[in-house]
Image (cartoon, rainbow, N blue to C red):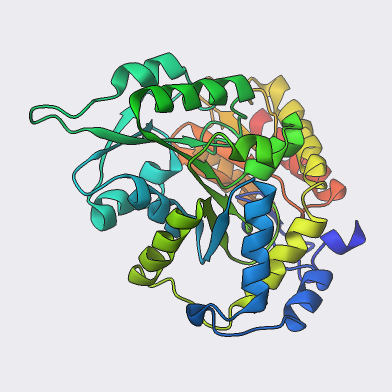
Length: 351
């Protein structure tokens, strides 16, 4: 567990903005330095090839493709399913339409329509009622995207029965089902669902190595061999072809080997933070994973004021809206820092 702390993490600053701020651990750096590499555009990087095969096997799919970012992985996957001008369905707070700067429309020519934001509490029957078939001047639905865990939904975990019903809905209407699984590792640890148990439900998944797992960069698209062959072409078109990238793939392989089970520690720390703010009337919705959403609608402080007060004491938090803030635990945060963060938040919220 000592290796899960970066030697470069600042002891003065507690950064709970997100779980992408982690630094590579000493063991990860050693793995990166020792990585065997080749030119991945030619398909000749053995470490990348090994990572892709490993991740594909974890999710029970034929193939996977390493991409430099989760946004690129998601957008490649969406283009695999939705031709230009056709429609993607997702929720109004989905990462693919909220935090990817309009890429579905700009790069894929994809029309998006959303159901009301409900985080992990989605209703497959509501989604089914939104699906448009081919028809006279209608925009046909080609794919549905869900997010596991749900970022703006407070790290909520979509229950396995709900996902199974979503698979049925997709099959009944002949549309594809994509999973933005940036933090699917957290869902796996929280609910004990095997990764292959998730993988079998989706036509494609994107899974991230730099959120929670602590790798410096990288996501993978997972799917059939045919889809991944097309994904490789789309990655190149989007500028994602990489050369001796085994150095980064080695970090991902190390993260998979050493940092998945320890996510349970982050979940415990997040629950402690949620309990700390509860007495001050700040609603920290039921915390299942490593994200603590702060609803400040009934508190005198707004999100920007709380973030400013916290920053003044050495704690960084995210502002998601005028009355919404967020805390995210990760492997570079110690128990002592969690206690300090709770003290800072309690002091600010009492003011």
